[in-house]
Length: 86
Image 1 (tube, rainbow, N blue to C red):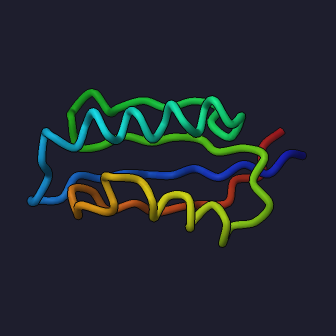
Image 2 (cartoon, helix red, strand yellow):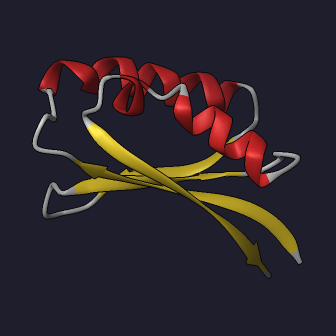
Image 3 (cartoon, one colour):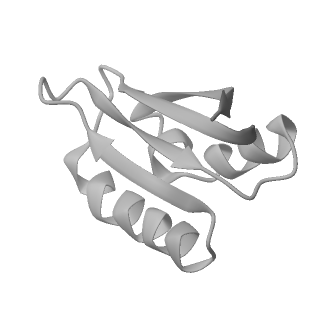
């Protein structure tokens, strides 16, 4: 079993379109560091999710998500779940 961390990002009423490019750059950095397995938006545009791997703990995953521009600007509420996958 491998532990991954699912980050759910749900848009808030304060969502700003100008945060999308910095968010994508943030995700690109995670991918380059080997920490991001997949990412995508929901078809109803309510938010999206990304999957972190190679992270040591739930606290570390939460600290990473807290640096996401979506969270920093209050554009989205990010919730991190520890996910034991097979």
